Length: 319
Image (cartoon, rainbow, N blue to C red):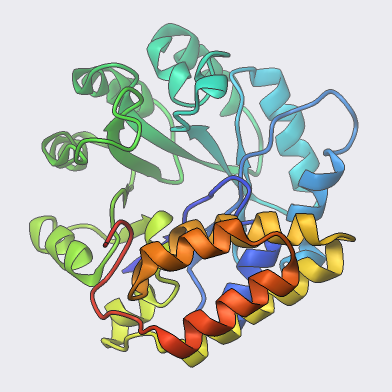
């Protein structure tokens, strides 16, 4: 099995990726938060920093592009090629209202003729592998049966499927009936993505679909960074290792943010996921969110690691 880290906007940037790889077994691929094309000769500073090879040493990075403009995609792909990349990913899954409203991400799925023409253009790029991360439709799951006809026309590096529609957002359950059909209908290699929060979730998935060879995990890893180790080796993360991971991320954010506010924002965002594997998590997420400065924050985190326990089998949304 190959394991991929899903791109999570604002969280899984190079600091998270490097900190993760330092403490835990590395993913087979790390997909970056999306890049939106611009007309300049280089990437925006924030995006450039995130994909610079020197900030991603030893990691198999796949930059992701979010656009419905073929010319912008090709321009960005060439910028990434100059940085040494030979594989990129197209985001057709983002459900955000601001993204969908511009016909990007999962919003592009509703415009199938335009999508087909777009793909026809971008697959003219030389020496660049292209994968797609997609939902199964914008409004209804039945849309997938038309989308797969389009995807099958092109030599994708792989098709990463999150079996929800845009309208599902992150509600409802992944539509495994449509995913089952995708496995038989796709001419390209398929990777599964969606709601792998625990070892139980993973085991149930591979029992149902033993032919799966690749999985992408996002929110499940944010909640339990030790999940891959648990899946591979039945080793549950301990507090010492999680504290090392936390401290590494904290240290790196302290180096790039001049004020407490920036560090606090990033750490609170991370804890909105990671808190779920702890006992008494409701009380502590409230305290973390109420922290006004780093002294307050550090006191809460110290107390959390001293007084609470990591609960085996817990994942995202466990109470």
